[in-house]
Length: 335
Image 1 (cartoon, rainbow, N blue to C red):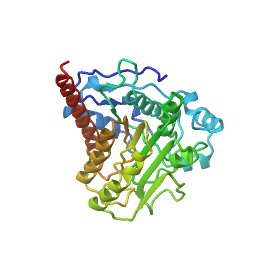
Image 2: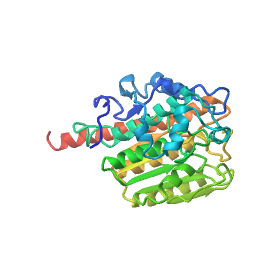
Image 3: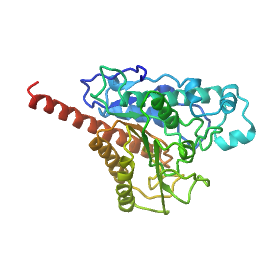
């Protein structure tokens, strides 16, 4: 049985829950990874009325036992005790600190919470309200079982997927649209036919080692909106042919044309169309959708914030459509 999680108000205007904690602002020193983006995204969504404070769910940290569903005991001991080697730290590309570990453990708990909510956090909630749950965080797809890399200490989506599987939701699909290949996620699930991993990314970019997933689409440098969206539209049917019970969507902001670590050329409007395509596909299939934000390193942090906020705006709009359809159905049935 799926564990209980806080449930958003079913009368809220979006019907799409949002998971977030102010503690995601993790001190990693001067860095290309702007961890303050999470607070800025949350503030923008509240200020513009896209979500209300009542719709925001505060997560609990992932337990060490939950992390152990994916990560090795040796690696977790290094992270917990601060015994990482210099090579470990260089590969992770984040400075070790207890605050860093606890911050990302909390963020992993956020993705678990989002997954539980999307799939029915309680008997009273199942089959209604938020089938789309957006996490203002997560998408740490470069973490492997025995090490972290590329700013990703724990693979939050993989841990959340394993939590769902342990609760009986076994068939999972992961749609990874970060500009970088989801190497850790592909490696973790390469021998698990229950999990379909789809990564569409810039081929000639980090990481060098790209383990084969269920479906990989490597794009040429400089791809623009129309080519990108055409390739995505072509690929998505294979994801849903897998017959997943839950879909995770890593909505990276780094395919943006002015991202420092990306070489694709998508516009903000192109990225919004991308989000709408994935969200609408999950809605048409009637499947729970868990959104994690993944990467975003635009030269102007405001651009990254705007792109991520637009993703959640699309999710909230879908929630309103579902809520309206549910109300119409009750009226038409005479309830």
